[in-house]
Structures are given as structure tokens and as C-alpha cells.
Image (cartoon, rainbow, N blue to C red; front, side, top):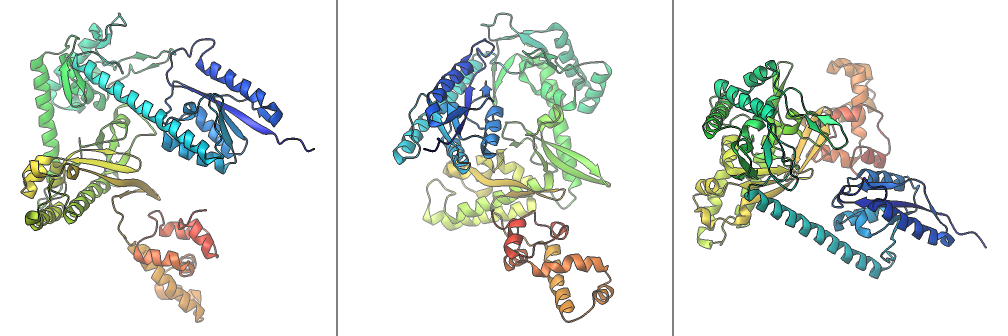
Length: 562
């Protein structure tokens, strides 16, 4: 009788909060011991426990971005794990969508999983149904808990309570942990008042930052629970801007776009606050006016017109920035934390002209689709259909000419995700431009979602947003046509040197580009139609050896999956 095959088991444990993790025996240890006992009970089936532990403490099950889980999945992909053992299935994930992806990834590596407290047999349809139902309830529980926490935070802030987060410069936590309020730090408060005074005097963030650094004013020094520190350095313009805009210094608590009277003492008086806010508003208007002048006398498109309108997926505002390269000024929109807080891999840095064009294209497409499908009005009216559609077409045409000046007026807010962009529109402005009462607009018409992704073409970042329309690359298309001409001439017996002399190019130039004529018909047709992948450039096609086999070409250049 042949021995049973060996099944290599890895145990995964997770705890959502950090409470109790510093104890000698915590929840992660309890889960691990229960899983060890279960693996030992299956020793007769060939189960053997791998020595490595995969523990995620203080991490939510709502995401798969957990260090220990990612290490475990890497081991699974490498086929060094045959069985993943968890205490309960919601330790692995609380998201049904994530669970589906995990199961597919495990099955691809011939790996299974088991919950030691819940009996599942995922090889049967009934077992998979039961598991999906349980995960649906786990996801529902997580979402309800999140809603309850958000509601509690909103209600608490409405009462003026401080609900945690990074302490602002000028304040410390109340010595009584049960008192959810702030107390003034006298030394830091003097720094805050000095920054307000400086801006009231100069009205320029650059000058305030220079004076602040010259006087040795520093950001707040924060000490973490593990003893490490952050902050305590010079103040950047971004940090000063955020500080001057924070209503906490007026004795208020902010929640999203509303403020409430706080229980803590104010550091600056209302007169100074109002003076600083007025000067900041004037500076913003000067910046927008400068942008309009820079766009030329024939355009009313202000520079960086998306300023203050877009946030990334973390809620951080996208802030305009620029750099100068070869005498040209290049504009960008970057996550504010990259300006005020250094590097962050999750931060965005997007070319401004491309992003602004993409947003205008999305708006124009939304207007066209809504008008065509009669989704502009809350109650479609056959008598007004033609008029409404004409107004939408007129507004779409104006977006092409007026550009950002009109776009900034129509957009209320927007959020960028890694795969989409969400925009909400200003009902009064949109209604005025369409000649329709705001109350008659369909609420669904005021929000839109469009695909959004980034593709890299060499050093260039290309934004792919909304409905992707064919856009032939004229340089690549022309080179393909020339390559066919060179291939015909070479087949007819014309020497390469004669072709090079005729076209006044080096022989190596023709030698590297003539093979374009032997690309697969599918690739050539895509180049002519403009439907090739955005990252397929002439440089990529000629920079290395080209496969002879057409299937290999299409695999290499992104026209088919492995």
C-alpha cells in the first residue's frame, strides 16, 4: 500500500484591532494553537505543519493588502503550500469579492483551505453555497459596523468632541483619556499664532515659510507607541497652508465639509482668522487670473482648473505642481501628502494637461449619452426632448471651446480610484447652462463614473479615461507603411545601401524598421486603426529582436494573454 501524499499546511491568523497584542498570549496565539491542534488531528491524512507563521495583527479583513497574507500567497503561488488553515473563514477575508479572487488563486496553485471551527467541503456545490452565504453575512457585518462607526464619529463631532487622529500643532490630548477634547500646548500655540500673524502680514506662503524657517519654527513632534518619532522639522508650504485652513484653531471641529463648535479653546481669535482666510482667497484668485492670462488672449481656460475639485482614493486633495525641463514648464496634479509629507507609494502624480483633457472628454461623453438616452430630466417629457437634447449638445460643444473655465464651473467634486473616476456635478450651474430648472434634473444625471487607468509609454504616462476611442499613432502608422515599401524593394533585389542612399537614412535604420512589415495581420490592422495597446510604441517594436511566429508576436506585444 503506497503512503499517503504529504500535505504541507500553513496557518494564517488575523486580528482586526491592536488591543491585547502586547500580551504574552493573545488572540493570534489562541487561533494558532487551535489550528495546530487541528493539523495534528489530520496527521493520518498526511498533513504536516510548515514552521513559518503568518500573523496579521491590527489589520482589517476588508482588504487583501496585509503583509503576512501577501507572504503566504507568494508561498502558495510558488507551490510550497498545499493547505491554508484558518480558525474562522472571516479571518482570511470578510469580502465576498476578495474571497472569490482568493479561491481562484488557490485553485490555480492546487492549494486548498480549511476552517477549523466551520466544516466546509468546497469540492461540492452545496459547500460552496454555504461558504458564500457565510461570507456574505461577514461582509454585511463589516459594512454595518463601518456605517455605525461613521455615524458615531459624525454625531460626536457635532457635539464638539475630538475623535482622534494626528494631533494638530498647538494642541495635546486631554490628560483624562475619557475626556475627548484637546488642551492647548502653550509653546506650540505661540508658533501657530506667529504663522497666522506672518500670513496676515505677507499674504504669501513662500514668504511665510522662509520667515518661519528663519525663526526656527517647527512642526509638531510626534512620539509613536513604539518610541519612534516623526515631525519636529521645518515647516513646508503645504503644512502651513493646511494649518492656516484648519478651523480647529478657531475652536471648532470639522467633519467633512461642515464645522461645529468644539469643546477645546481657540488659539486664534475670529478677527485674525477672517483676515487670513480673506488673504488666502485673494491669493487663490490671483493664481487663477494668472492661469487665465497664461492661456492666451483667445482662451478663458484657467491654469490648473481642477484645483480643489479632485481627491485620490485616500481622500487626499490633488494639488497643482510644476517642474521645468529643457526650458518648458510641465504641470502636474499630485496628492497633497507628496508635497507636505514626502514620499508615499500610494500617492498620485498625474500630467495636468492629460488629466484635464480626460475630465473634459468624460463630461462631454456624459452629456451626449444622457441626452441620447433621455436621462437629463427626472421625468422625461416628449415635448421637451428635442429642446433638452439640443441644449445638451450645445453645452457639449462649448466644453470643447471654453474648456476648463466651463468644466470647473460644472464639477462639484471628484474622486480618483485605481480603476475609475467618480464625478459629481453642480446642479445650479448645470441647470443654468442647459436652461432647465435645477429641480427638474434627474439626480442620477448629476453623478457619473468612468473607467480610469494609467499606461506607461517609455517615460510618458498616458491617461486612459472614459470610453477609449481609436487613436492612431501617426508616427507608428507612417513607419509601418514605409516598412512595407522597403520590404517590397528588398524583395525585388534593391540593395539595402541603395535604399539608405535614396531615403537619406542609415542602413541600420532600415534594418531595424523593415521587419515591421512582417508583424502579424492582427497587429498591423490595430496599428492602422489606432486600437493597439497604448504602451505599444515604435521604440518598443524596434528595441529588441522580434519573434517570427505571429502568436509569439501577439503575446509579446500585449494582444493576447498567456
